[in-house]
Image (cartoon, rainbow, N blue to C red; front, side, top):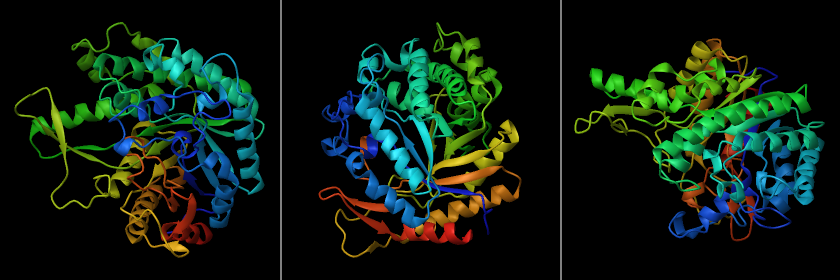
Length: 444
């Protein structure tokens, strides 16, 4: 299988997961700083205070990317590093850091893909309700305008939000991510405001950077019925509506899926929301990014007909996260996106796997055969989708570095570059060299 010459090969990271310098050089506190310093929220009490120290070591990291032939780097800007309180005074040191990083990338021939929000909301805004506050979309638009004005002369590729489903539901419904709220109505209110924020941010980007190539990134999760039982089939349709269509439809159609809106309205979960306002989310987009990690098999709960649960197939191969290795799910997700929504271009903005690895390594290369096999399978699935007409333009492997993996702390390693967190030593993994080979040859 071969990929086109102009196919974009990249790696991806997120600000709080790698930068460190969490409250240094003027950076404000973010919700993950607060959350990770709260007992029993993150495994082993780990925090992102230092992480991969990318804030100070970015020249070394960019040089590593360059050595692999990576053509693009997807990273996120920390809102709290640019505007410590989320609104108001700007932190020049933060502005300058990302300017240096962008310049270094361009010097290395690497195209920056900037994500404006990857889950690290300024704590000062969370203290005012965070994503449940109706003012949040306006605040986000102002922050977007600042970033676009500062970097738009050099950055052309922009992503507004990373996985708003996670922002809303992991953060405000299940409470397993920052800010740790457990409130179903708050979660749907937060989700609504992510849509409005995306729309406002797209408008701000177009105003500041008329030639911007802009879109958003969604985590698309195929939901399949575990059996042919009509109750499983119906529950899989509802689950898909809550996970996927609730976020895809506003971006592409300017409205919520009617069946899910009715389902939620009857339960009082959308009270007080102007659902028509979501039309702002359907700004003309140049692409959509999808993050793909898993599919779910859905089975109805016979003890509670309103609920469902997910299960793994028998004998499933899983990663260290317990997620099924199922490459054809990526192919199916890409085909569905192309069929149902027809975006002009698609990027896989994240795909990768965590596997158990030692904290310290010797030698120049760490062997990670499971990850190499994982990437080969998923890249093959991506190529199959392209052969069937999907306009897939690029693939970003998650993650460039082992990093702070949110509530899992440093216990899960997704990187194609190993990080010894005690010494900050970087070591290439075999998967990094496999990616280099693919970039050089265009063949799997």
